Length: 260
Ligand SMILES: [Zn+2]
Image 1: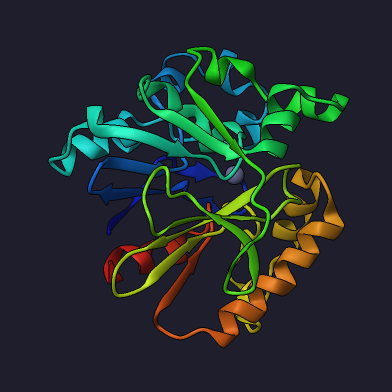
Image 2: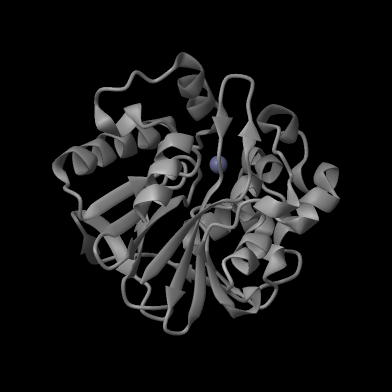
């Protein structure tokens, strides 16, 4: 399947400029998004939809960066977006969902619980139900029994063969990675399972402030560390048939664009 890599939200943190890496997958049955970045409604009303975190991640909120506008720029029809697969429901990943009101939202059952029926005070504070207030059709997955490269997984055959949910809880209760068969290679979008290439390549130093941010945002720090170890092993034992990207690293995003 043809996979486009879009930055749907430049984040101007005090210590780094990050992207919001979104995949647009062309399937035989229409378009599928992995994450949605920020959307037009976030730009119209950042205070209500993005809340206090926007003072920390300082999103550019540029209409030209939204998925809906970039899909038009690609010569594709945003109305063909049938499915949005969420790595998790933080606003920088799913704010743009409302720009595709007819799309079905796919996520893990654990993420639906943590974000939509939050059991803890931290989760009630973290997630904003306004982002799915347009009441999209929702499909929840438990991803038990299958395997993708040694990871527990579930192929989303109801969307398209070659799109695989690879749950990696830790950043949030039900965080997941998503693997897509792009023909000559697989693309693993690891969401926020890691935030800096040094977590997986085993050689680039991870700046202290990245580690602080990762810990601050983690629902379960031990699981985040476990994901780092498993992804580093996968990254270092894989060849050119697998591209691993994360939600926010700009260098990995730019590499994905030029090699797509
Ligand atoms: Zn994020």
